[in-house]
Image (cartoon, rainbow, N blue to C red):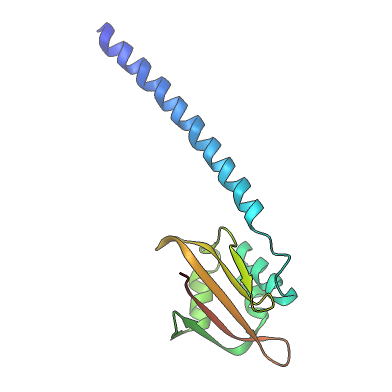
Length: 141
């Protein structure tokens, strides 16, 4: 009986230590995310759309796009409105690795509930009226 009690005590102590380490990891990851999410190099309109995406605000995000905006996912056409409805608020960047194309292309780590974490890009195309008419997304190398 003493052996079982001792084993239970040791198991409980190990579980408590593991929980403490997990919470420390989460805090460290959150701090790293804040440090790697430098959006200062983004085009002003892209930054506003990006912030809306990250906060899960689909209405604001789509307000930056034309009514007939095109979406290409790894070069394949997709339904833009369906993508935003399904993904906004459930998928987001966890870091930004690189910004190109005068602040209109974002590369970084991306998290999705269905596919997990991977490196991706969002490339925004701005028309002459200052609205996005095309968004290209996909896995980045």
